[in-house]
Length: 200
Length: 177
Image 1 (cartoon, rainbow over the protein chains, first blue to last red):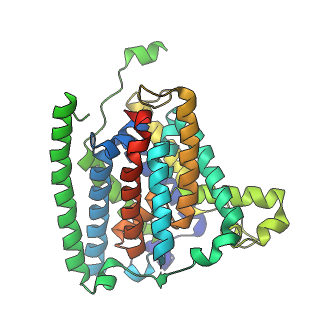
Image 2: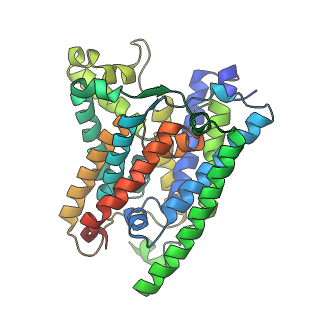
Image 3: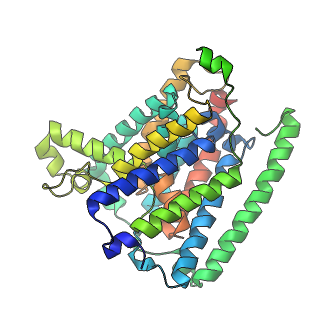
């Protein structure tokens, strides 16, 4: 029965080896996607290269379909998979900070480590910024701790929130992703024509 | 230097293929470990340990640092996210070496100085660090992992990420275009 770790198939120490191996695969794939390069990531927000959207939504629907399938087959106990509790308003505000940091700095945390390990100095400086931002959060948290813990909704999924079945929600998410891919391909063509060059 | 001249960097891979691979890596983490990917968590651990080394009393009174320091018996660096980010650094480097894309450089548009680009990189990192903690995860932990889980808060954060980035893009266009 999965997830294996929750059924004591291996020790905590061995889980760290798995973390390292999964991390290698994660970093490898991010680099393949061009996400060690801030210009590729930033291009998403000027509509000239929609790689971020394509990669992210393909990854999300792949893993979401996998979770649904393994649960449906009875191989996975989804209730044992960790996910963060929802605190709606602080997460939206936090998301806005993340979005600003993304376009101003050119990376998200994961991609900045890939950029740094492939020699990008802006990626290294960016990581110093992450340290600073987290330090500021830690030091100032006592000032807004009640806001940080406001609008608690517990462990809740889109299907539970909208009262739909897991399968139907997943189907709608996949439809939305396919629509986004079509729009992205179309947008890139328009921008390429406007700029007189290819999307890459 | 001659090596860089001899080998041209290869083009980036097909984004849908990359997305499929990334989704399978994430799914493997879910199925094997029962948890997903993350990047900012490792930095949080490092910051918490740093603060507790300098000011142990101060750190022990702060709920945020306490969470990342864990119980006193265990080493806080013996953590899933810490080992994962070490893997990310290695995996990115391996892929970069195989495709001749490892290069000491600063990524920026043609209309900004290196100094200003690095200042903005630091500022952006600061926003991300703060935001990642406020949103209870960054793009890896919330948008990707929580997104695949169909977590409500993760989708709300993801929408806010895209909305804010598109909203602010115009004002920093000189950095990239």
